[in-house]
Length: 175
Image (cartoon, rainbow, N blue to C red; front, side, top):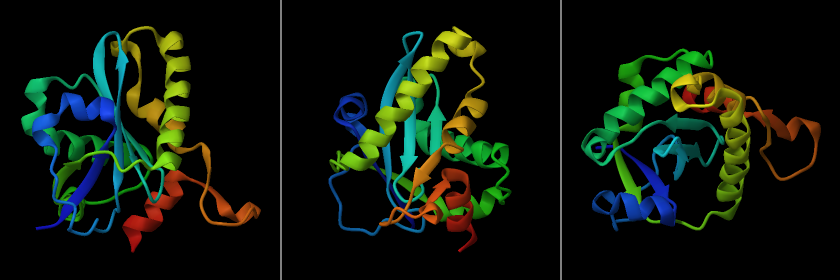
């Protein structure tokens, strides 16, 4: 069975203790590792999940403790919906096979991805004031704005090393 590994921040780890696995031996799968953090809008818990390879973002909104039993399907549906919104057309069954089962792990102290997520959370804080409540926030549109921001992939500083998350995720899913 394929697994997609998601490393949580310490803050999120406290909220989902029963989901955290300690088995870190299996490989990361086609999508690589993901990092997840929690943020709040109108006192409701929202998750920002970022793919480590492509810096592609997915936002899960209003996650309650009762939702944790269905978190696999919530993530897959949100991820698929975001891919469709971003113009990356793929089959849900194919995506479901690529993702497999979610496995939540403690933090991996990936400072680059954590810094990237903190920067994106600042953008979201800015937009919170523009839209007011969570119900008024167009989450797919805001996530699309995050995913179209220029990112640096690669070692050099050439212009060709800069891209956006949507293009990188499209390449990854096409492989």
